[in-house]
Image 1 (cartoon, rainbow, N blue to C red):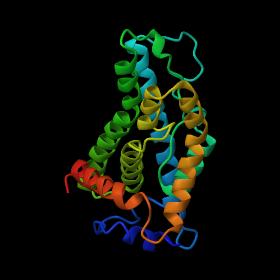
Image 2 (image 1 turned 135 degrees about the vertical axis):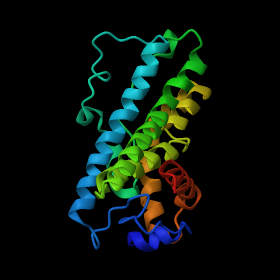
Image 3 (image 1 turned 60 degrees about the horizontal axis):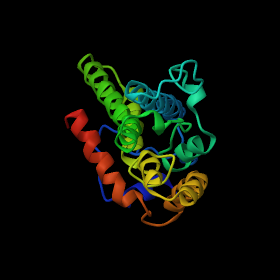
Length: 228
């Protein structure tokens, strides 16, 4: 199913200046090189700030890991997750490689875990705001800010879709803290596959499955940040 028909199911019309749908979906029939390259760059920025945002807050709250290999290196490629990247390519949203957080090091384990996990999507929204400022500046100079518009779109999409209650998305990581150990273990193992399956089902189902509920929020936040 093409991205145009899938997007129309969200019942939200795009602003006239957008050269691609929001969220962005790969469509072999209409794939453009500039859009694809912009999308890949936006994914790298999104997973980087998401993972490092979690790492920074977790460290500040007490989970300090001298020499940890999964945080504070700011190399986007090391934060890429195989299934998370596939989900970006299939459904327009995805996740970074899961960051290990030791809640036992927190004075208030549940609260601080919520704060640390929530820091990922918050960091995505902050980056979207920075990209929006660059978009406004480039437009003022008459330049075409296509890459930064894509950075905005991917980061807003990633932030909104993190409310899905499946790990390794933020809401899912918080949910497993409330479950019995065996149920939490099972959900953590199955969560990434369930998310990828949802993304595929959403693309193949007329009208979508999750996008009609989440994409309007993506559009609203995108427009609000852009000031349009």
